[in-house]
Amino acid sequence: MNKKDYLTKAVKWVEKKSTTSLKSILDGYKDPKVYRSKSTKETIQADFSFTTHVGSKHYTDVALKNENPRKLVIKWKVLSFMASIKKGKLHLLAPKGHKAFTERLVDRHNINAVVHSI
Image (tube, rainbow, N blue to C red; front, side):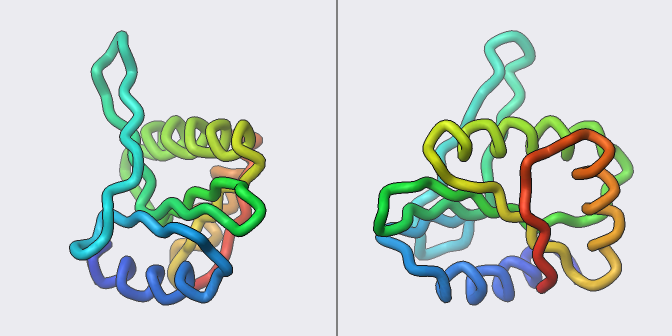
């Protein structure tokens, strides 16, 4: 399965949450905010972002194994930091076969995230 297939499963998970606004990289939704590095011009964007009724901002990313885990770590650290500023959390949705990889990266690099199975 590719990431698009997992995104359709993930949107069902996110829609179960009590939200006031949902943004997604999927068609039919507004795009989540894009963060850019001034020095490297790289962009970071969550797969989903949502705001709860109490005003906290949460970011969600589908976590898949990657040959370059450094980019994932940077992305997740930025999203985790932005979520913590807005009193929210980073949710990493890991499909079967990707959860152990995701948990290892989160633990090894001390990323403040919640890993969920989808």
